[in-house]
Image 1: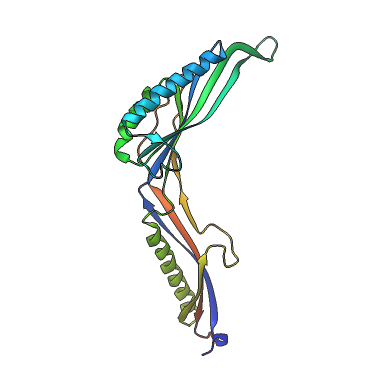
Image 2: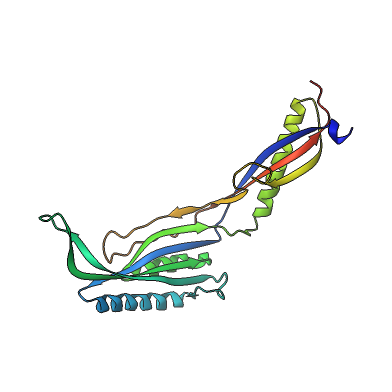
Length: 234
């Protein structure tokens, strides 16, 4: 039988697996309000210094290109100041209160799951810190990826065999295997369903308690494949 005599079968297949997260990202803001801008900034800087000193006792280092995948890193990546406003019920306008608020955005990335309990305590006790969210993630090179991709290929082969059997034929060989979308379709080929646990402070200077319980991550591999089968006679 020549290639022209064969039947082309095109399929898309998917495989999924749940894995332990490789790391967590904690995002929050340190915020202080005062009557003078410089005082608000000094208060934020002092709170940040105290928090970083506590994180250092857990082995935390600043995040930079050299940090790589260190067990615990931090980044104070954004400073802002703003005038505090309130809604005047008589004028129905936003008015200045005379107070100024300074904030610094903080991100803590933790890969050492053994420090989660201590880290949670440090963050909860930090003055002026509001934790906005905790996101759990899996690395692009997580060791489970090869198994998930192999399972997607096995699923594609099984689907092709099902189609061939329904036509009274058999699969002869694989012609093409590609990430989803590369054979003319659309869709992501490899993705992670990220899980997040959120916690917010109830008011100004009230620390939000982060939920630091690891959440499994779902790895999804999707492929497209083309197979040649024996000739089909209808």
